[in-house]
Image (cartoon, rainbow, N blue to C red; front, side, top):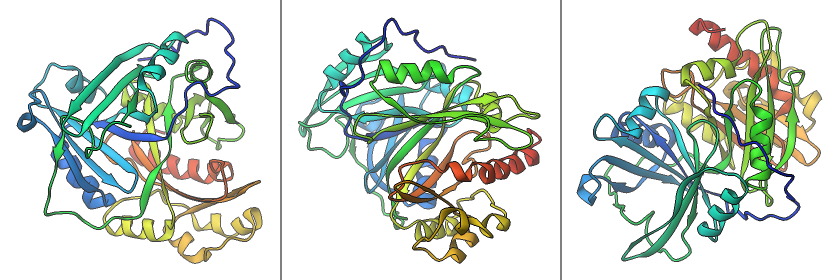
Length: 377
């Protein structure tokens, strides 16, 4: 299944930020069992219970559990019956990201600006209210079945959104130091990266701040291409991947096959202490890609002096890279479900604004080992 981006009608001036974004408001996942998924993310990742909507709050066709850790908010939604859009999404894609919600000052203006530039409307501006105020929400379609919602909550003082009630739980494991969404990565089909780059440039006013071709991201067997899109203030960044020709199937091809189309490959989450965060996550059962110890023999020759001791980084499998503005530390989980699709990245930036180009080869080789075990390389 392949989704085509819009075809630009004209060159749009993107020197002004016509769509000011205040960051990621929340990420919503459509899942087969929201209650169990919430328990998993609380137990494994250290989220806390926040809010709930379902039959008890007047919602008859679905339930949603909202969990939060610092400025990171996930919504886990499951249908109560079959034969509806949510159930079909889960059947087709497995547990997956459906909504990347973006916080804006004016959701009506955001919808108008993006739809006038060729974006396909998902939700016309809608006002929802309760005793704590009102929220205005609108949205547009992007690659695959993924959507962006624009959330205006300046006149709201509630926990999450109108229609949700506080979710109190006696079970609230300690947080693991996850702070906020650093970036979300999308996988798109063959020859679809550039059309979606134009979508983000022309419909949303983003800029292409980094590009990687198959020479940058490749091994002996497989490769991919990627471009990083960023909004004007840099609060929201969306790398976009597409497959490239190789001797064998790349991780993006494997994703597209099992996801049955284009979608969010991984969510990268920021931390201020990656060693402590990853140590906690591993103790809770989160599995990460294994990086060969040979990677660490000369890594400091490549990246230079860092503040951290190399030993715990190597023991945990944390990757290191440097750009002109500093360095970063990053690690990638294995897929968090049986389909080899959605996974998570944990990243700590020590000044660096890039995405770990120097780590691509080591990361790709680790991914290929997992693919080979699954018989999908």
